[in-house]
Image (cartoon, rainbow, N blue to C red; front, side):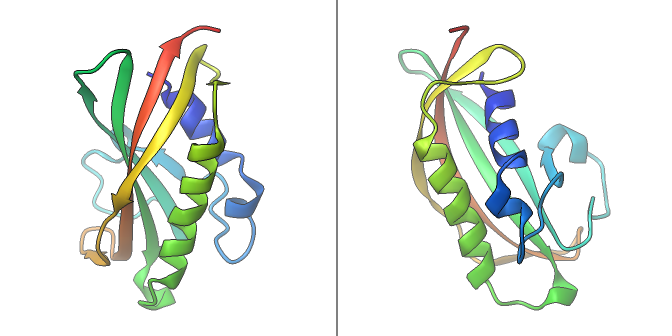
Length: 139
C-alpha cells in the first residue's frame, strides 16, 4: 500500500495550499476521523478513505478522496470540483513515487466523481472522487 506517497503528494501540493483552497496540512486519513463528530478544520479539508484491496495482479487499492468545505462558505460546488480535479491531476501524473514509509505508488486510475452532498455531522458541503491506486514495496 502506497498510502504515505498519496498523503504526502496531496499534503505538499502548492496549488491545494494556496487560495482559494488553503488546504495545506488539512489532509486526514479516515482512521483519524473515526468517531469524530466535529469537522477537523475550518474552511477546506480532505479525507482520504482507503477502501478495498482489489483482487488483481499487484497491490491495487480503492481510494476515495472527500473534499469538505464549511457550509458557512456557501453551497457552490464549483470549487469542490476544482479541488478534486487538482487531486486527479496530481495522482494521474504521479508515477513511481516513493512515500516516507518506503512503499511506492506506481500509478493511479481515475474512476469518477460523486454527487454534490452535505455532511450533517461535520456541517460541511462535500464531494468525492474515486481512484484505483497501484503500489509495490520498495524501489
